[in-house]
Image 1 (cartoon, rainbow, N blue to C red):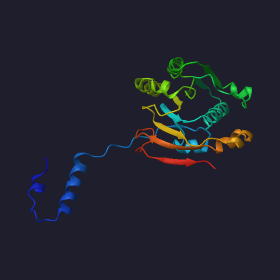
Image 2 (cartoon, rainbow, N blue to C red):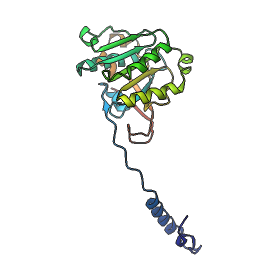
Image 3 (tube, one colour):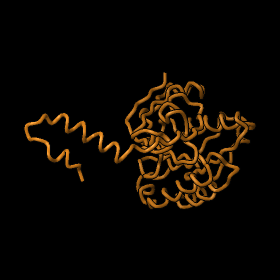
Image 4 (cartoon, one colour):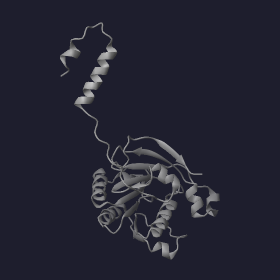
Length: 238
């Protein structure tokens, strides 16, 4: 209830003073919540991707990359992640729902950092991802659903994504999901690839390809992971 001093003001009195007093009263009654500490992030080694992610993949969280069409760079990102994981002397699990990953261009030494789980249907991939996110020896788990149809991806129950987010949070795992359409409602951040590679890209090295990626952040949750409200941002490399 408002104080009597505010309610009994003369109607001709300037309303500005009332508003100032009311704001002061509300600030006293309902102080702003303390800012949550920024959640650690893991750099992907891809400049444009890290900018979209506000510094890198959020740890203990789920990130979604939407790739509406093939040839927009999802495989390039996965290969770059394998390379950076090898350099960091860590391991990465790739759950390949369509058995479509192409390791060409990666050395045997770099591939030693990769656990490649080859599946043939989304149900297998979902179960494997849930299991791997519970393994504390795998700090980064990638689920590639790009070879699945939009109908198959949309058929995945939304409760699964929230369960996977809890698993990642409880185990400190970085989970990254590639989808043809936005479906991961529990993702801390959703990034969309926006441009296809042309024929000249066939002659480019991987570093040149990653520098040519075009992507935008379409959703960033207001959470400890990011510490700010959702916002739209577009970043282009090069």
